[in-house]
Image (tube, rainbow, N blue to C red; front, side, top):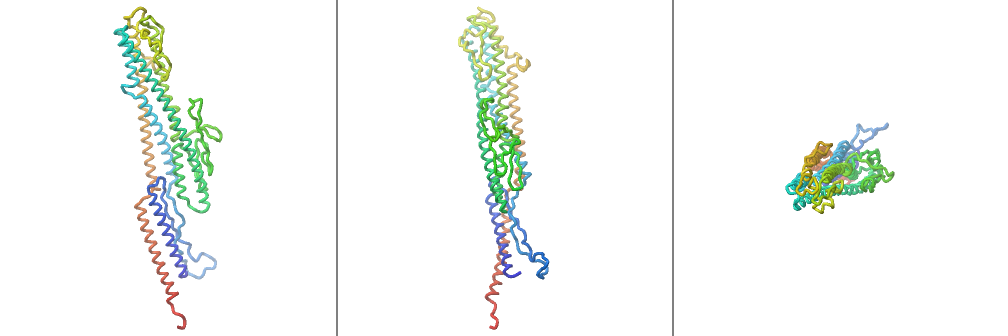
Length: 467
């Protein structure tokens, strides 16, 4: 090994330590960047000299040729990343479900003075009050107003639940557009990463960007992720490919006449309906198509039963004008329930059980007693008990949803901590590395200075032969 080969060895050391310092600087700069994975310069000894051969130069042993940067390693754990994505998908789904149930609870506004339960009690009490003076137009007006308020509350609750479904529908359409955009970006990053790996480069930052996008996709859809030998990834949703190499497949959200013109998500390549194993979109679809319709159906059942029972009893009575066989309510659902237009004439309210009996309040009493009639749930519950159970069920659903969100959040936080212990940047560790690489750089520079002085001595300081 010559003097100049020693200079080359020192140069390699300088360059290697300089690159290690640059990697440390890059880590420090991105310590708070979301999705960034810590990097590290992998230093390896250079190939020793002389190489093994059949004709060695006679030098005993081998001499080292310095240090090389083999690669810039990206600290990540594929298994942890996979578990974290699954946890985030579960958290997104349970959060959407919890929020939808809380909104239903808020719409019903129970218990409270402005809820359906209070309005039902006022309605029955109004009929009870009419029994004290069946001919009183003021008391008759109170009955009609109580009925109008009760019907109005059913209407507004049903309308609010329907609007909630449409709000979720709009969010679904927005998420589909976002998903298509994310999938296109992943496909483009696949192209760049495969190209860089083919050139022998290590595209760590591009991989971080791709992992962030994949995390957003799995949180939306619960997509399955597969890594390929060429460095690309594949994504699949419900058995259908979303991203494969440089290609991405798109979804579309189109109105479905069979579902009140709410959107149906289908694949654009074959028109098949898309299914989601988890994530925000599954939570939105289940809330829109199952949770809220179920609650609306229960409300409709109560409203229809009220209309039927009140009308059946009212038709048996007589008004002050002897009108009989009239319905008090119209409609057959929470949305359509209303006080019949015939009740605009207060004389038509059938408080009496016989004609020409203005002081008879027997039918009004029978109507008031419907409050305790067991006509719901197959004849085992009153109107109030049915509605109370309905409200309690929603409360239990909210509590269960809260618990699921808390469990999913705890798991997500734990896995995030585990993932950060592998991929996160520790400023203390980077500071220690900086000192280590700086000292190594200074030592290499000092050796290079010594070698330079040696070369100067040989070139300029040695005498000429014969002088």
